[in-house]
Amino acid sequence: MSRTIQVIIFVSLVAIIIGRQFWSTTAPPLHGNFFEGTKVVPALSFNSSKGGSGSLADYSGKWVIVFFGYMTCPDVCPITLAYLNNEYGQLLENQDAAQVVFISLDPERDKPELVNQYLANFNKDFVGLIGTRDVIDKITDSMGAFYDIHPIDSALKYAVDHTSDIFLINPAGELAAVYRGPHKKGVITEDLRTLILRGHS
Image 1 (tube, rainbow, N blue to C red):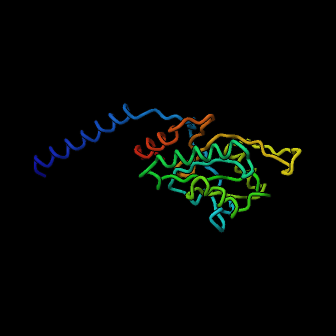
Image 2: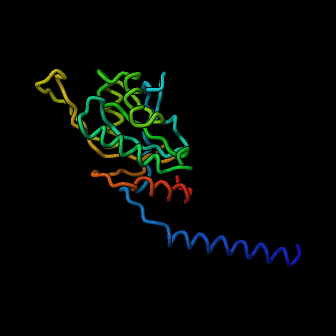
C-alpha cells in the first residue's frame, strides 16, 4: 500500500471520528421520556383496520407511534390524532421510517372498517388495531397504558377513560419512550429526526 493511500485512509478515519464527536455534542436533546434497558413489546394478534389480521410486529424496522383510544371518545382522541397527523406530516422524507398505530380500547363498537373510515379523517396512512379484550389488556399492561370502562347515563351506555400518553416503539420492537400530555407541537417529529439520523434502534 502506497504512502498516499495510507494518508488518505488516515485522514478519512479522523474525519469520521471528529464528525461523530461533533454530532454527539451538537445533536438536539430528546424530549420524550426514554426508557433505560430493553422492553420488548409482545407481538399480539389483532384485526387491522386495513383488512385481515395485524400486529405491531408488522412494522418491525420502523419507529412505531402508538396511541390508545376509541371512536366515540369526545375529546382526547380526536385532538391527539389531529396532533399526530401534524407530527407525521412534518417528518417529510422520513415518513417511511415511521408508522402511526391507533389501538382501540372499545372492540365491541370499533369494528375494523369503521376504524379505517374514522382514521382516514385524520390521515389515510394511520393504521388501527382492534383486538379482543384479553389482547387489549395484555398490550396495555405491557406498555403501561391506563384505561377503565365505566357506565354512563346516555345512549352510549358506557365510556372509556384512558391515558392520553403517546408511546414510541423502536425498530427492534422495544418500547423506547412515552410522551406525556399536554403534547407540544414538533416534539415527536424532532425526536424521530434525531433518532433516525443517529441510526438508533
